Structure formats: structure tokens, C-alpha cells
Amino acid sequence: MSSALLIRGGTVVNADREFAADVLCLDGRIAAVGADLQPQAPSGTQTLDASGQYLLPGGIDPHTHMQLPFMGTVTMDDFYSGTAAGLAGGTTSIIDFVIPDPRQPLMEAYRTWRGWAEKAAADYGFHVAITWWDDSVHRDMATLVQQEGINSFKHFMAYKNAIMCDDETLVNSFRRALELGAMPTVHAENGELVYLLQQEVAKMGITGPEGHPLARPPMVEGEAANRAIAIADVLGVPIYVVHVSCIESADAIARARARGQRVYGEVLAGHLLIDDSVYRHPDFATAAAHVMSPPFRPRIHQEALWRGLQSGQLHTTATDHCTFCAAQKAAGRENFAQIPNGCGGIEERLSVIWDAGVNSGRLTPSEFVAVTSANAAKLFNIYPQKGCITAGADADLVLWDPQGSKTISARTQHSRGDFNIFEGRSVRGIASHTISRGRVVYANGDLRAEQGRGRYLKRPAFGANFQAAARRAQELTPTAVQR
Image 1 (cartoon, one colour):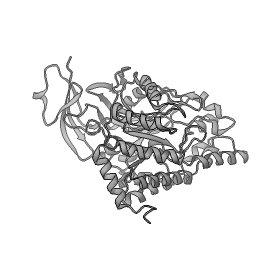
Image 2 (cartoon, helix red, strand yellow; image 1 turned 60 degrees about the vertical axis):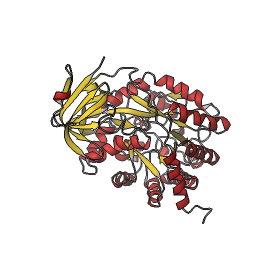
Image 3 (cartoon, one colour; image 1 turned 180 degrees about the vertical axis):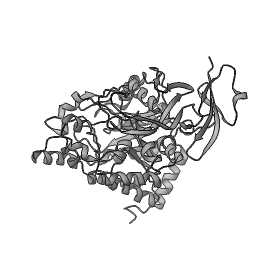
Image 4 (cartoon, one colour; image 1 turned 45 degrees about the vertical axis):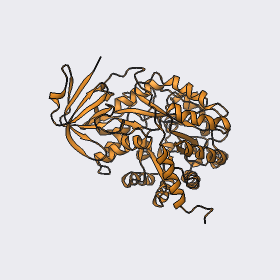
């Protein structure tokens, strides 16, 4: 049965411009964008009045962890509850992570995650983590790219004795990704230093959450970012650095880009707004609820991250949505290193970034669209299917009320987590309606998410031009060997 939706009277905002237009959606896609589309709408078309509101592309969160087994427990949000929470805040697509255990076949882990994700309420794709290396990993990477639509591979440079990659694995995987037209991504923290510092901090008698940032100082992240960027430079492969949290790694990306290297940076909403004082809260549960890696930083780093987004040296915003409840966090009551790492935020990301970014003048509405949807779609090769309001694109849309407001609270969130890192923050600028593939799934507080309605997003490899550009960049960049 066909479905039709006409959104009238709003201001369309894409990453390149904003303009007054109606948007007609037919059978899950955008059929037309223009003035006075009423005559083109078939009979029985549902109509939404967007007067006084912006019409934005649905948000894309390129970094989530739904139903993640981690540190001996499993996150509170599964693929249904997590994506439903995202829809309530205007996020219509996620890219989650398949994380194989060491020595586990990649395809086996991938099939497990695909099964878990069948309950998703919103569209989803996957990055696949490379946690070990042998010939089977080399082979499975090709299967994932060529048959399953995976075009990015994650590398954890942290979590020693668990899923941490050594440099040999990084080199092998980066080279294979280049051959396949896929992009390596990295969690940049020096795992050896973190492991050492955790022990040193504990020896000082610091066992609470306040020890977490002490064991993961900014230079630990900066060193790993520089190392990953250098390896990518030598091999001539583009690289995406996830959850950039500090000046040191932001500067490493900016330097590399200034010399022409293709390096891209992601920022978490939490790192833009929350500082490290949270770890010194006298209540253990509150402090532990903020434990994630990299940790929240001193306030000076926040301004550097905003400037990175403004200048185009940093490109996407995400949440690293990974929810653990107070009982799960309590596993580290006697040792901060045992606190499960993760915070939520998928429902709040768009509102807090709009409020702190657009309302403050740091970002224009078009720049907001770029860093919350369009850039992720481009970097992971699903643009303009996603991230753009144009004829032929998926009808993933958000009616955005710039004057609407709310106060964020765990009591009213849709996530199954029992804590909200933005608790008590009042924001101006909220989603009044969310449309997923042409269907209204959220309307003025009424969440209409449907389990299993989400669709798996195949993301094609980047093709011959990707490899050619990488080879050309390598030829033009003086490597250590050439010097």
C-alpha cells in the first residue's frame, strides 16, 4: 500500500543552504522539494504544517553501542530501545559496532550483531572492529565489504588484554582497508600507558571515579592519534578518528589536514558540554555514571573542539551511546578501572548541540546539519540517500522547532538507562516531529517507534577513485622513508 506525506510551509535546511519549500514524500522517499506542492500530492496524503519550523535531514549518529557485551555485562539499551530513543530526538539512522572477541571470526560476530539488530526501530549500519589478525581476517574483510556493505573498520588502540590492536594489526588492517576501498577508524588512546597509569593511580590510594581521568590524560590520546595518523600517512589511506576529546588529538588532525592528508575527526556531544569536574562528585553513582573513554576533559578542551567543528577540521558529532545502570557501574566501586565505560545521549544529541552551537552563534543551521548528518553520510558513503533533503533521498526528516524547549531528565528520557549526563540542562530547539522513511514516528511527545521497522544500510566501498586519490596523496607526501 502506498503512503504519502506532504510537509508544508517550513524552511528546508541542508548543509549547503536553507530555503522555504514544501516536501512531498511518497513510499518512503522524497518525491519533490519545492514551492506549493499540494497539486502534486495524491489523494489521501497526510499533511503536516511546518510553519515557523525548520525541516532538517534526520540525524545520523555514526557511533553507538546497542546491546554491547562489555566488561562483563551488557548495555541497558538494545537495538529497539536505543533507536527508539534516537527517533524521539530526531536521529533516524545509526552506525553501530560489531566487536569480535579476540580470535573470533569476523563473520561470526557480524552475523550475531545483525541478528540483534533485527529489532531496530530506525535504520542502521555497522563498523566492524578488527581485534586480531590472521589470514581469515584478511579474507573476511573482503566478504564484509563486497557482500555485506561494510565500508569502515574500527581499531581500538586502548583496552589492553582485551580488544586492543597492536601496531602490526593496525598496519595489516589499514593496508587491507585501502585495497578494499574501506576507511579505517580508530579509538585513539595508548593502551599500554593507560594500563600503566591505572596501576600507578591505584598505588596512590585513588580508587574512585576521580582516578579515571588521571589514568587517561590528554597526551595518552594525543600520542595514539599521532601514531595512527602517521601509519595512515605512510600507507596512503584515509582515516577517521572517533570521539576526539582534547586539544592534543584535535591538533594532530589539524596538522595532518594542513599538509593534505585525509584525516577526519568525530566529536561527542558530551565532550562539547561536560567537563572533568563530574568525576569528583561526592556521590559515587553520579561520578561513576560519567565514566567513559576518553574521559570528559577540563573545560579548556571544549572550546578547542567547538573551534574544530567551526573550522571544518572536525567533521561529525556522535554520542558513543553505551548505557549502563548504577548497579552495573557499581562493579568498580573498589577500583575505577572496573567501572563499565559508557554514557548515553542519542536522544539528546541534536538538542544540546543546537542549543550550545546554533543558539550561541558558534554554528549556523546549515553547519549544524553538516555535523549532525550530512558529513557522516558523505564520509561513510550513503549521501545523498541520507543526510540531504532532495528528490530521491530517503524521507528521513525532522521538523525542528527553534523556539521549543525542554529540560532534560532521566525521568522523561526514552533510553532504558537510569542516568542522563545532561540532567537538568534546559535546551531551546527541539524535534517536534520525526519522520523515518516517510512515516511519522514521533509527534510532539508521542513516540510511535515500531520494533523491527529499521532497515539495514549497506554502505558501498569507495571505489577506484578512493584508491587513486590515496596513492596520489602518498606520492605527494614526504614519508619517513623519503626523508
